[in-house]
Length: 218
Image (cartoon, rainbow, N blue to C red; front, side):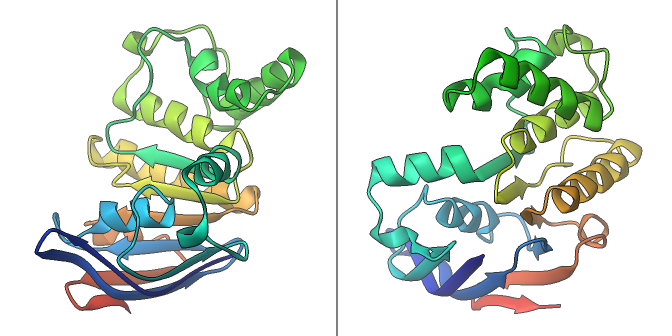
């Protein structure tokens, strides 16, 4: 589903990614390990087409993202990618259901489809009955569950998670990581978890370490 070949990325004189090659198949859940500042977030941005590369190719479902226009990349992200971030990025003025429904609204689903899909996804992440709750009433673990539901509600082909448990206590972190793994697998998506934590990466199918020289299996 996803293949990076010889990807390099620089910011000015600083090389952030150097000759990165990586393959992820449909249904795989892969961890990218690395210290803070090594380029994990940049790698996810490159995979999502948010950052242009200086060399190499990024193939997603047979399309070379380096050859797509900004509009084509925006459409691809909207329809085929889901994102989970450390800071949740749950919109404070929307309810749980409205936050989860937002990707479907942007894609033009009918009101009936949006309600059914959002409600089902909210139940799947263990928040059934909290649809009308505002984010201020939720714990950190619950907010991350909302973020996972929002990332998965549109049935994306690829889910990208950037340090999703960095703001959670250990118990909530374990629960959220297992939930994310289960939901990615259940929906047949490919998942990439970027993390500095060996414990967080332990539940993944394969693990890689990102270094200044590239990415290597561990």
